[in-house]
Image 1 (cartoon, rainbow, N blue to C red):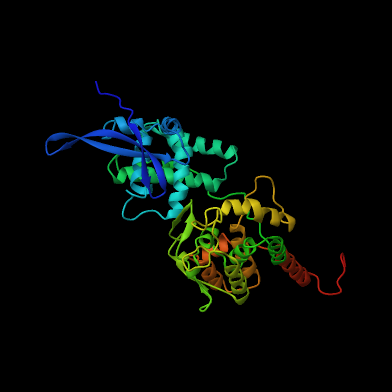
Image 2 (image 1 turned 60 degrees about the horizontal axis):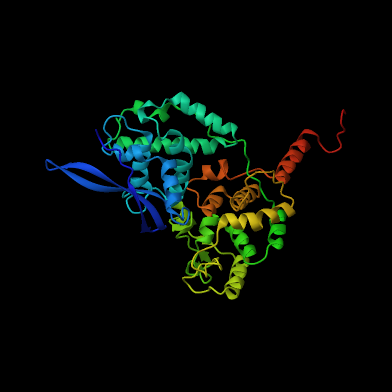
Length: 399
């Protein structure tokens, strides 16, 4: 009878920091001989699990023992087998494939796997999971408040896990081996991004201290993503050439590549924005070329600041004072400024290709369909113009 091994925990220094790693032995056939080989599974960062008992509790929550005790994936392959293999080869900084996912995508996939997919489906046989029960699960999450785009993203992550398993011959390669091919899921949301008018944006800026004011102006004027703005070192801000180079992004407490190839295009630096940026450069203690433009003073400039904390402590309160209606639990952050810029530019009849270029979208459809929202003033003007055509000057109601 085969021995059920638990493995053992060790701390390893990895790119993202000290990491708890579960180590275990695997017997492999090599040149006709059976050899004992040591394998590893990353459990979590030591800063998140300071004690060994905490790390073991996380091991129990993730239950990777199906993977450990069926290392060759013979017989029934559990979903956790596929998920941990996917994590190791696609999401691990040290072992991922030659054509890795974008850092922003990886940062999205990790919590979905850890918090939703593995806890719910990890103990199930991968080929025994049915499309209809997956649909029921997604609908149950919708009833708990998750938006359809988020649920669709979960569906796509789970499908990627199955596709990865097929690519590595862990499961059959036919369409029927991936239950997500038959799962129906809405892709649109009832949520509509809150848009700031230029007047509201001005009030927000005036309510902020420095450097939060300059950071907010930078995002509002250029359409930079907050991860790109926080990932800027001074050497990428060219006052002589009136442009900002976008070479990196601060995502998930690490520096990575921008979201896409289109995202790497430089953005213009207007005279007004340049004046604010130069003023902040003169005021900051971290003004060398390699210093971050918006560094964390608590970390002595070694890392950029955290976008979510800036949103909570500064942007949302300032937006509320400016009259932006924010319902309890409603999403609002720096990305709304990107939506606001696109909407404003399109509403004042700016050429769509110019807006697309400024926002660095891959195509204009994204600019128009996702980022452009009709502003109330524009809708009222359009309605008034139409009414003027229907009712010529001097005409009376009922006349």
